[in-house]
Image 1 (cartoon, rainbow, N blue to C red):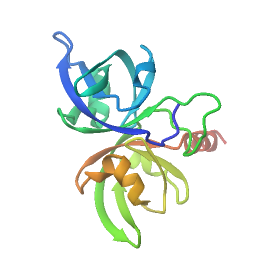
Image 2: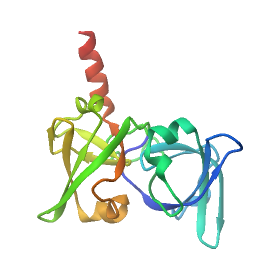
Image 3: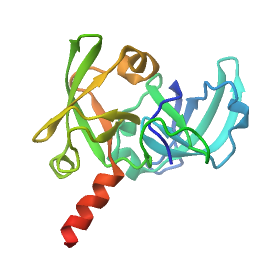
Length: 203
């Protein structure tokens, strides 16, 4: 489990196929002061997608970790479009007793959204996104959503589109610093909304 509070921003260093399959092995920066404590088998949310650490190390560029990604994950998330140098929002798994600053995030991406626009609004930026139609009913004004792993509060909803505000600190610490209209993003709906909808279907 995660909170949607990004603790580091890294970059994809290497991308290599696993044998003759369409699965890939990724090497990603681990820019935490205590990166040496990352255990093999640990979970790290990478732009909202929970990946399992299969190797760690350090070199002249700093610490890194490797994760293996299936063809299914590559096809259902933005990971399939990553290239060496792509920025990655990073969050290590929540531990019991940690502060829950965002909302509970599973790291299981529900779909790929589209960035529609970004407009300055007072001291922040109003971003608008569109989601696949099946996900739209799970997004509500003042509810939570994870975009590329970032926990955000929904401002307004209009059909498949919704808006959020990004403060400068969040932009500086995440991939929002380089996001642009037309870019794809990983979307994870609030798990509470998912269960409420499920209960309503059974009523």
